[in-house]
Length: 475
Image (cartoon, rainbow, N blue to C red; front, side):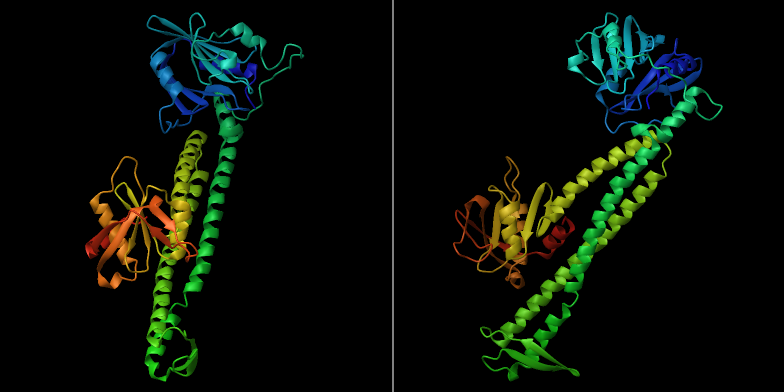
């Protein structure tokens, strides 16, 4: 509930602003200004709020946070009225428009604070009524720089309406023996609209509990994947048993029944592969599952850490007693969460990502990831690398406008292309690279298979030092 005209008069009477000097203007939010004034060795903070349903002016006794970045209207006030002296502070009749007249050197400024719930504004004019700036720029009302502000027309447009009977207003009955300013400050801090503690804490709960639910769901999905990878050791066992019983396997056998301690294990064989090749297939499945398990466990740990951080942030917010500080913390956290959303989108990209300075390198580890990256995540000017003569990863370097890929970044990407290919054990290899726009999908070919054109050749020797450096910049 906004202040009524009687309450505004009482507040102005208690404030006794005539003869006070304005020392600073702080805009803690887009619709909140705090004027710090000084008079007779006493400093006060005058809060002006244009929040819908909580329009008001009064002294605030709470700490005032600064905005994350300087806001336009506060900068304007600092340049024009700060260090000026208030020569008048009145309400215009019963219209809930407060006029402050400020003298700074030879200049006279009029500050009109309109406290209407549906059309609140803070307007600064010169002595003749020429609008210098407004907290809310409203062209239709002429409340923009260069417009003309008329108090007569403003009062005629009062939201109470001329054709309606005048309502009788009284001071609200608030507990306590302090000044009315102090009571109003406490009232709005506890239950006054969008800047009340109750409303802000409810906003914090919705904002953070929603994030916590999403993180919990993601961790649960990862744990389901973890259980599917936890049986990775059986693939290694299959490979060991095939090799240790290789003499018993005959051409064309589809199954091997081998003794493992007191247990007999039945292992599927592949007709088109000899036993050694089948064993290698199981070893490769083991390596993939083991690597996948390690990656999933790392992501689970990150999710649980993030969940703990969000929970602790919510607890700190709910413990805050100053609504102005809580409002700022929520705005800051909302900005950081927006950044986190972008980060999560980056993490959602398939494959592995490495950040080398300002360059992004993306690695697809199998045919599915290669295909998905080609379809959805890379663009025509991005660089594509692939090991020659070996099955393996597609590696992409995200193009930067007007920049050529440095040789060191190209060698990084080439090292990754060899490392994540079948030629890894060789420690070096040939690869070719070209821009994505010069790739053509193989007609009726397997998923992800492309045919490059305008490709260039590169020979890379994989160095442990370079791989360690790359691992440290993985994102």
